[in-house]
Length: 364
Image 1: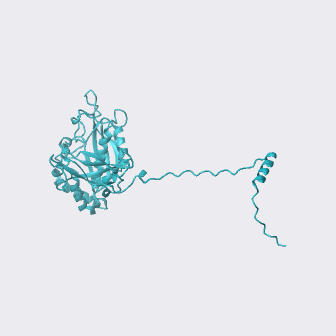
Image 2: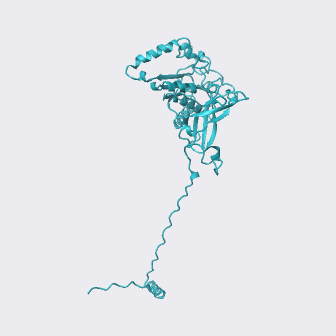
Image 3: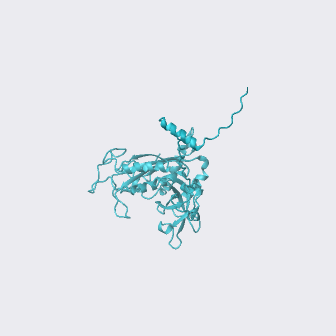
């Protein structure tokens, strides 16, 4: 016979359920209660203003609407003054720039940098390159800018980048490469605002150290003088994204060199300028002064130069040596004009001694 479907069991009355529980207790058994479900951990709240934005800066109108600036980005604008020395100022931004067009044109008082008169002193800063800020860390940035007169939109005094950019664009097809060897001397600080005259490696009693010889690429106390500065500069340049390719101690005590490149086109000047700026910032906490002077110490001591290695595509291909010879021959004809553009004080460095050629002599 087919079994009939069972009827759904009816729930027991409360009294009967209690009696069963008592009986189970007598037998030494405890009725197991179902364990409560574990509560899920609360999800952290995601607030848009807890994140660093990237892209175009919103400007003052966007800043005014923020509850705080704690997630903003600091941008250190860096440029060259009338003497070719780096200056900088900081701006608070709403977002981390990804390209130079994300940055706004800023301004400064050119009368305080030797680039304008007091009655008409506004100079504009046009962003040209972005670097990481190794001093403040992520997400902050450093911005290489060049200076332009606000009144006529012409390059400000000593803005040589503008003309260089035109030249690089004109000869873009030649793909110019540069490698820069920047020598510098660490100096003992003197009076505030006065050019220092004593290298860091010179004796405290005013006497000169032992002659040149052991200092170049040397190691050890009283030999590699200033290494903490050189090493920290190297590290911070790498963090910033500067194309720094090496360092070494130089011939005079307290003198070092860093190399920038290979760089292509206009980035050569941008990376060198930012490397010099980072060096000046590093020396602030090492109680010394960085000098790029061609002859920082008189006497039988090497000067400091900025050696430029250069090539274009025809020099780097098979048969390129012939092109190199042609370029050198052409340079020789205008050597005097070139020297005039290489900065002041090179007559003291280029004496024919200390591994240099006489300033009036051209060789290759």
